[in-house]
Amino acid sequence: MATAQRDYYEVLGVTRDADAKAIKDAFRTLALKYHPDRNKEPGAEERFKEIAEAYAVLSDPGKRAEYDAGGFARVAGLSPEDIFGGIDFEDLFGGLGFEFGGDSLFERLFGSRRRPAGPPRGESLEILLEVPLERVLKGGSETVTVRRPERCAACGGSGAKAGTVPRQCDRCGGSGQQVTRRGGPGISVQQITTCPACRGTGSFIDEPCPECAGRGRVERAERVKVKLPPGIEDGVALRVAGRGLESPVHGGQSGDLFVVVRSAPHPDFTRDGADLWRQETISVVDAVLGTRLRVPTLERHATVRIPPGTQPGTVLVLRGSGLPRFGSDRRGDINIRVEVSVPERPSDEKRELYERLRVLDHPQEPRRSASPDVTRSPA
Image (tube, rainbow, N blue to C red; front, side):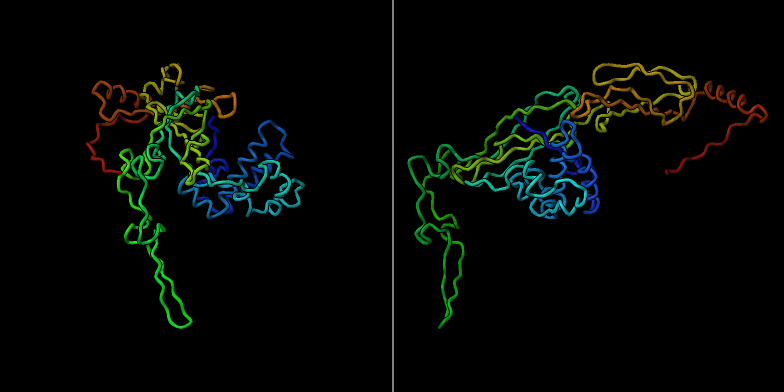
C-alpha cells in the first residue's frame, strides 16, 4: 500500500527560495498549532510529525540541497536520528511548557533512533505521475511503469554465461588495483592505480551472458498500481515500499518508490488547491443587461446567472463544485472570472446603436463625428 507524503515546502507553506528564518518561523507557528500536548484533534499528531520532518530536512543546508536535487528519493534512506540529530527543539521552544526533547516526544513519535542493523538498503526511486482532475475528484487507482536495473537472473549478476565463471585477472590478482612501491632509506611511497589490464573489474568474462551482454544487470519494466485518495494535492509523494533499486549486497532490502503526483493540464480549468478557476467572456450587451451561461464542471454542466451591470474581472462562485479538500469531506469552489469583449470593428448598424446610447448618456453634448483612424502601437 502506498503512503502519501507531501512536498516539504508545501507542508511548511514556504516558497522554494525561502531563507532559513522564513523556514524556522513557519515551522514554529505550525508546530505550536499542532503539538500533541496542545492539539488533541484527530490527525494533529500526524500533522506535527509531517511538519517536524519537513523542517528537519529544509533547515539543514546539506539535506535541503539533496532534497532540492532529487526529491524524496535522495532523503528516503535517512533514519530519524539522521534527520533530527542536529536540531535542538528545546532551544526553539524553550519555556513554552511543551515536550520537544529528543529523549521524550520524538522518541514516542518516531520510535527508536538507532539505525537498523543489517546490509545497506538499495537506493530509492522517484517518478512523476500526472493525474487528470476527474481522477483527483473521485480518487481511485492509477498504474505507473517503473523501469529499473535488476540483477540478471540468467547469470546471477556475474555477467558470465551460465555454466561459466569470470576469469580472475592475473596482473592484479582480482583486486582491480595495481600497487607500485618506491622510496629511499627510511621512506616508502605507495601508489595505487586502476589495473590497466582489467580496467578495475578484477576479472575477465570470456563467454558473456547472452541475456545481459555481460553487464550482469538487465532493465526490467514493472507496472505498479497506486491508490489515490480523493482530492490528493499537487506535490504529494506516494511511497511504495520495496519498489526502488535492489540493495548493492545480497540479502539487503530494496529501496522505496516515490510517486509524486501532479495535476494534469485541463482544457476547462486551472487548479488552485481544492478550487478550480475558469474564464468566461461575454459581450458588452450581456454585461449590461445580464444573461445566463451554461458552464462545465467536472461532473456536469451548470447554469450561471450573469447579473445586469457585471463589470470586467467579476468573479462568480459555484460553491462546493470544486475538488475535495484533501483529508476532509468538504469541497472547494469553481471560480468563474468574467471578462467583457469590446468589439473592435462593429458593423454600421451596431455603431449607430452605440452612437444613440452615447447621446442618451450625454444628452447635453453635441453629436460627435467619426474620428479619423488611429494606428495602435504595441504596448
